[in-house]
Length: 177
Image 1 (cartoon, rainbow, N blue to C red):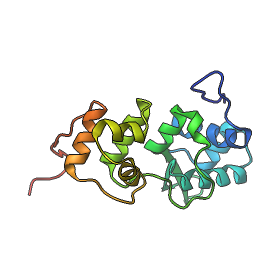
Image 2: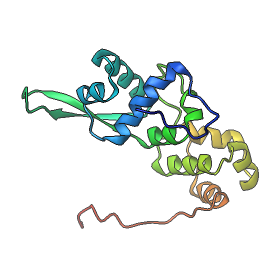
Image 3: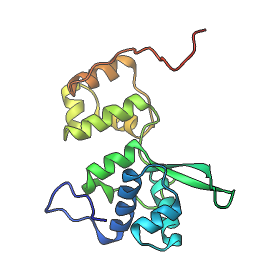
């Protein structure tokens, strides 16, 4: 499988390339099992399992137990997360996640995660967002890493800077009370 590259002049470090290729394989085929991934990538199943654990520790993958028809037992199926998709589309950042980190540097709020993804997509820095929104860059960094939560007014101001607005949307999946 060929590696995804955002820039033809950028090369992913060799020690990250196998994990990047595995992430791309999960992206191409959601709910992949370790056996499927080993066959797809041509790698040893133990190496695949090690890489899957490393990618999960970075927040790039999630897993769920699934039944296996041939054995009647359970195995894990893997799916890529929003953070994993972001890493695939920004390979230069793929290697910036430290190995073995128990929690990746990300906020727990889906709204803030989307805000920071949009910020990265627009190639804006936290410092530039803070300057344009009239805020302290350290506070915004704390939001990004889950050390502090912003108020609604601050979220609205940050969203406006990057061309977004907040809206309440009905949750159609929930039953009526």
